[in-house]
Length: 250
Ligand code: PGA
Image (tube, rainbow, N blue to C red):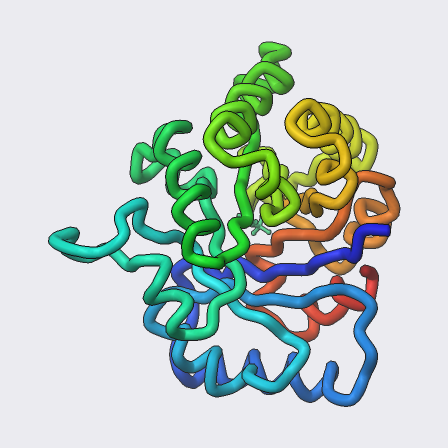
């Protein structure tokens, strides 16, 4: 059985004070409880030290939202995987649609970042997803196949079990529109079929998260689908109460 994972993606939100309140709310609720699913928050880089000091010794992991494809050196503004490890990161989001769109990250770059994350001992949460026009043109399978194909071609088959995938339909991100559980399951299942071609044993172990307006009121139905192994939560991860309600649903 795959353990579910609920990961918050704070995006470019937060402040020392707001994060302290959020993290304390999460910690207070989860302290001393045996939580059935994995729980993580992916914070902006400047707040990773705060996550480390607030979350060390708890059941909540933390991670970053991007990493440099380079190891180190003259890359002004970039943050390396080794630096993320220094601050205790377990996860790093790779290829979020906002980075593909606003920072022109190509499928090749996303694949290379996935490899770099693995080399640094981080678990990449690799995001894939189609836009509304692609879905309407019946291109969902083709787009997702291409995005995941680039990543699978770049990694060793022995590393497949070390990645997490997030299916995030672009039209559902931050819009309040969610894929129905059936729509999401169909894509998750197709993704798993692709993973099997790379490594059939590992494919059964890979957590495939759903992301895109997952909220307390729709989480349970989405998480009940056989190939939906958790959520990558944007907006609803910024309020302890909402995030915890999704954790409880998992
Ligand atoms: P959302 O964002 O939950 O606010 O739709 C999800 C994401 O972009 O990871």
